[in-house]
Image 1: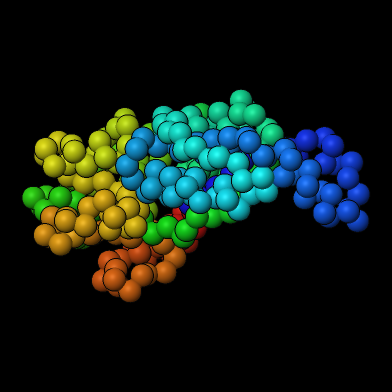
Image 2: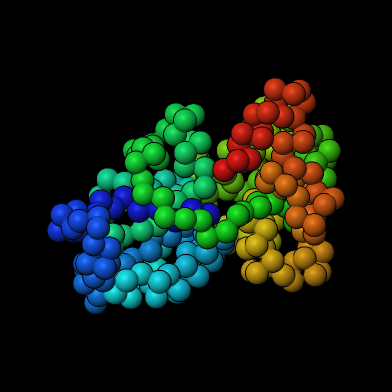
Length: 265
């Protein structure tokens, strides 16, 4: 999960400071951020992995910035994270007081020409990564789809957020490249809304980060309330060694290569 900003250098005066005067440069940064508030924009509704990592980052990051600015998390959901990402690129202040956690596939979606994109991923200032992410596809225990082979054999109704969100695009890719029969239903505000719909029987499953499931839905795992179908990563965590990787299940070598490309997000 990446942390980005569309900032230019915080003040023009910093650009005029000689590279041979690091202490003065550091003082200028400290003076700029002292007493300021940095808003960390989260691209999803509360709940789920992006919200978890966003709030965690906002809690601790400020103390490591010169001047120790206050950091405040703020949710800006919409269109599977696209609303916040477009806003951060085109509207947000560029003085370092606005940073965000965009969808992990923002660069891939741009390359593919997905609709609604109004940013250039290469022109964001990439600050870092909160954590590597393993995403997991799961179905509720009442669903007849309990394995990947089941997903190839029957239509499985899955809930997701925006049309460019991995919760939807992964399903469409697997239908094309791996012969599954997922029926994606988009428009949910976030994974918490999808999960409520799943528990009510309106959809059969969804996709979320493994870390988020372990944190928010530990009871599901303990009580075997979910079937773990596929994981989206380049390597298997030890506790998911029996869950197939997306890039392993393409029907041809070319399909597997395409699925591996999407897994790099």
